[in-house]
Each structure stands twice: as C-alpha cells, then as structure tokens.
Length: 211
Image (cartoon, rainbow, N blue to C red; front, side, top):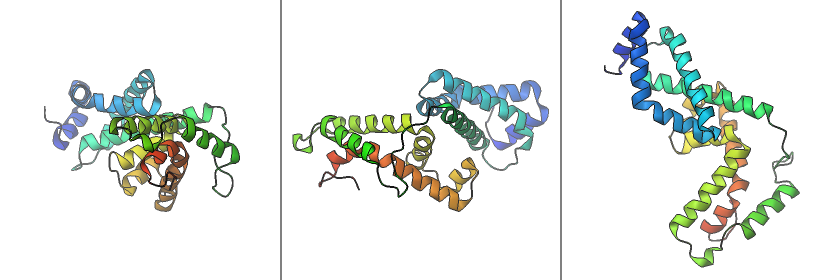
C-alpha cells in the first residue's frame, strides 16, 4: 500500500480494516523515528510508547478531518509532536518547582552562575589539552542532556529547530501560538540553553566565554 494522500483519504473513508492496515504500515516503516523522538524528549521508552500510541489513537479519531493534497505522514508527525508537547507540559506541571536560573532582568542568578562556573572548572578538561573531536561532542551531549532534563519542552522545540530544520511557521502550528509569541518562545529556548552549555562553550570558544 502506498502511503500517499489518496490512499490515506480512501482508508479514512472506508475505516475499519483499511485504516487499521494503513496505520500498521506507518508504524512499521516510520514508528521507530516517532519513538526515538519521543524517548529523547521524555527520557523514557515506556513514556515514549504511551505518547506514540496515544497519538495513533488521535490519528484514527481525526483522520476524517485530513484534507489533502498535503503529505499524510507530515500530518501524522505533527499529531505525534503535539501529543509529545502535551506530555512534556503535563510532566512539567507535576514536577517540583526548581530554583530559577535567571533573575527578572534575564541575567543568571548568583547561585546559577556559581554552578555554571563550577561545571566549567571541574567538569571537563581545558582547551589547552587539545581534546579530540569526539570528546568535545561528548561534552556537548552531556550539556544537552542536562538542559533537556531541566527544560524538556524547550529542549525538544530547540531540537526541532536546529536538527529538523522546522521554521517558525511549523513551530507556531505545534505550539498553537501567535507568530510573535512563537519567536519569543524560541528566544527563551536559546536563553535557557545557554548556561547549560557553558562547559562546551569553554572548549570551542577562543576566549573561553559564553556568547
């Protein structure tokens, strides 16, 4: 079965085994990508499985609303990402409130600055050691993991922008925000990420300072 708009529209119209077969093919051929994306954001394969299954139920329920000639896989992927954002927001709402990293003026608080300086001083070797590229990449991954653990929704959106190349219009649709609010949110993502990457910046910046 071809996973195109015509076959999807026909499957949605006929329902039953037709749409079930269509979605099984989607899961077999593209499900791994959905699971990996959700697991990277949620840091749990079990939670990722719940998100993807929930998303597939939503696809089933909403397939009659699909309007071609757009790509059905892109439409399904957006539902997966919306479901993932809902899960991240629910988790964040249930998490205990953390100490803020920034004050009202957007500057690092003293406690956060001290933590960043401590990470930079003791977490990795200095640039003078000429670390191999794979070591620098390891530092980057560790920094991103710390960022994602503290701000999972912001880290996920930033990954969509940087790695997947989603533009502001796509992020706007996912966040269901106005263009201005979306630009502000993406700016917040970068600001929140900056202190977590202090160790990496210290390695790659000639001056050894964060931008």
